[in-house]
Length: 159
Ligand SMILES: [Cu+2]
Image (cartoon, rainbow, N blue to C red; front, side, top):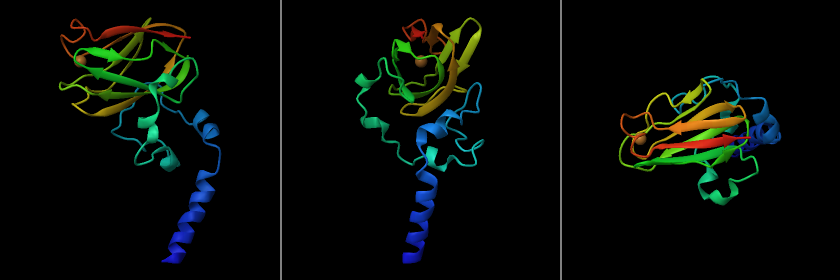
């Protein structure tokens, strides 16, 4: 029993001690969209990137401002999209939470570049979207029919 614990701690030390930022900068292989459906499909060493309970929930959203957060929180509900008005250019991970009752999706579109959740999120569900944003203005909307017209449409400035 103790040996197992020891071994686990050792593995942990070996795997987790490398600076995480380094790791993340080189491990964003997806060009377009991913969903939470297959988190470890492309990443043999993804275990440290997939903690069972992400601690981000407690981050005050006030921190999402001019700094470059590793994750950008987006909330979709009836009928609004809450997303920071400005997002740094480059590779970003959007974490989208459906806090409404209906299904909602998310699309970011600019100049023919489009990123979209592969399918709408059910009530209470979360999804993530890896994007590589170019400087400019992106239209952000919910693709569920009728929702855009009801207010699920906004713009985000990428700098
Ligand atoms: Cu919607």
